[in-house]
Amino acid sequence: MPLRRARPEEAAQDRVLDVDAGMQGSLSFRDPVNLRINGRFEGRLTTRGQLTIGEKAEVRATIEGESVVIAGRLEGDITVTQRLEIASTGRVSGNIRTPVLVVQEGAILQGQCVMGQASGSESEFLTIEEMARYLEVEPAAIHEWATSGRMPAVKDGAGWRFDRTKIDEWIAQEKIK
Image 1 (cartoon, rainbow, N blue to C red):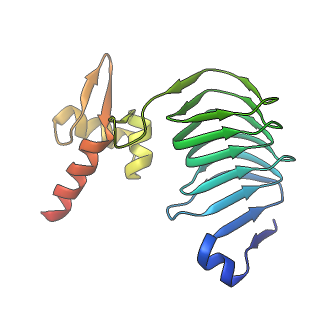
Image 2 (tube, one colour; image 1 turned 135 degrees about the horizontal axis):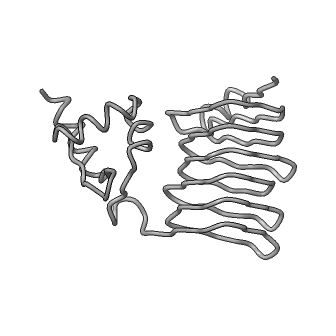
Image 3 (cartoon, rainbow, N blue to C red; image 1 turned 90 degrees about the horizontal axis):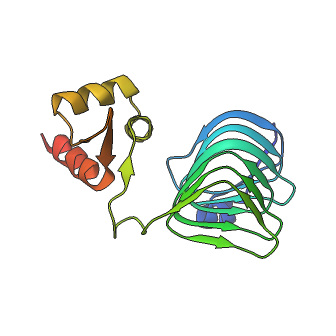
């Protein structure tokens, strides 16, 4: 699978990673990176920084990211914390959750879109599964901590939801001890 890195002087500025081949699996980036997918990708993708799905790209994935531009085809759900743009050549089939959505003329969106205020201005609530990915632990541990009151959580019907701001404060307090 050919992955191309930008030249060293570009990498220091932009940390660009181009993916031109077909890939399957799960990719997760903890540090901000400008990722461009120009080929096929199937699986789960978690990014920080800018994600661009190129015009010729075909992606079947669940995506979580900060800023995303879709110029190719995406089939799957996408959660964006800052901004999602669907270019005129973009085709999206799936559910979207984003504070800012830009849809250019000619783009196609099939699915539901939930929009809210940008992070920081309004609390972001996470599910048990999202919290497990965020903290990199098993969902069972999150459920146990919420049920026992060891972490801030709100009972939501039969499940739990977690205010990301309160969780970040809880993490900071736990690290002090």
